[in-house]
Length: 521
Image (spheres, helix red, strand yellow):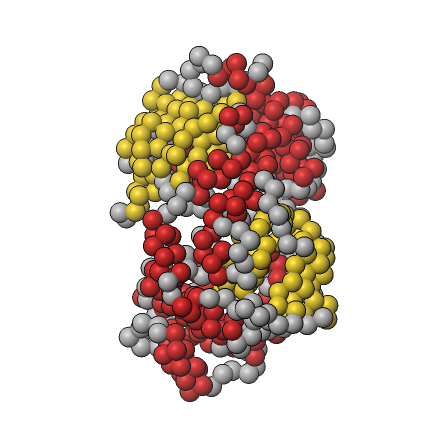
C-alpha cells in the first residue's frame, strides 16, 4: 500500500482545525491546523519555540486548547488526559523512553493491562503475556527475549518496545516526539524500518524531529510551524531542503532590529588578529549527540557554532565543559591533552560556560545577585575555602557596576531581575573566575535589543583582551556578525568551517540545507 495513494481522497485519520493556545497572555499556538492521513509519515518541523511541543500536548490531552477543533476519523474529540487520548487511539512515544527499566520487556508492553486467568479475575497469566509480547515484537521484526529486563537492551530496542506498547492498545495514530535524538545511525535505520512497516499497514504517524536528513528519508508530507503559526503543509518530494530551512527560520522582527542596532555599534567589531591556539578538539564525539569533529579555538577570537536546533551546537559546548562525557576524541588545552570528567575540571582549566537555559541551568532564582555571581568561583575554590563575605560583596558590587546590572541591591533575589539583567549576572559569574575561554550558549536569547547590545559589547571587549570565545546563537545574523571563524553544523556533524565574510545570511542557510558552499581548510 503506497502512502501517496492512501492519502488521496481519504478522510484524515486526525485533523486539527484553528487550534489556539496561550499561557498567561503569551500566544503559543495561533490558528494552527494539521491533517494526518492513514498510511503516511507526516513530519512536524520547526525551530525552538515554534510550538511543536505545545501542539503535541494539545493532541495528547496534556493541554486543553483555548479554541479550535480536533477531529479523529471525522468525529470531534477533546481528550482530557494522555490516558483518554490513548483510549481514543492516539498513542505517543517520547524522546525519553517512559517505561520501567527494572521490569521485563513483556511487563512493559502490557503494564496496566496484564492478561489474567479465569476470565480476567484471576492471577496474571504470565505465559499468555509473554507469548503476546513476542508476537507483537515479531510484527516489528524484532526478536528478543521478552523475559529479560528492559534495561538489558540498548535505547533503540527500548524505543521499539515503547512503539510495540503503543501499537498494542489498538492505536490508529502514532506520535513520535523526537525519537531519534539519542540514537546512532544504525539504530535510526532500525526505527525507520519499523515505521515504514506500520505506515504500510495503514497507521497514521506524526513524526516530530529537527534532523533534516531524517526528515527527507522518512517523510511523506511535512508541516512547518514558526512562532506558533502554521507556515504551511507540503509534500516532502516537492519541498527542497533550502526551502524548508528558509520556512523554518524566517526573519523574526526583533532579530532584525537587534541586528541593525548591533551592526551600527562600533564596539561589535571582532578581533582582527587571533593569538595562539588555546583549545584543540580532535575527533571529539558522543553517541547520539555529535559525530567526530575537529576544531581549534584561539586566544583573542570569537569562534561561532551555527546551525538549527539539534544540529549539535549545545552538545559540543557541553562536551567541552565536561557537562557530558565524550565517547571518543581528544581535547587539548595549550597543547596538553586533558580529560574533563566534570565541569569542575573545565573550570580549573580556565573555561566558563553560560548555558542556554538560564532558568534551569544558570540562575538560582531564590538566591541573591551576590550569591549567583560568586557561585562558580566558590565551586572552583571548594567548600573548604569559603570566600569571605566582604570579598563576595566587593566582587558582586564591582560586576554590577561594570556590567550595568540593574538591581536595587546585590542582596536582591536574582529572580526579581529582568531577563537581560539575569543574563549579565550569569556573565559576571564566569568573569569572576578569570577564565581563559568563555562558552556563550544563546547569551542574548529572550532579552531586549539594548541588553543584547551591552552584553555583546562586553564580550567583544574581552575578546580583544585575549579571551577565547565560543559563541552559539540561533540568530544566524548575530553569529555571522560576531564570529572571526564559524563552524556550521547539520544533524550532529560539522559541514564546513568558514572565515568571517565567507558566508552571508543566504549562503549559511544553503550550507545548513546541504548545498555546496566553499569552506576554509
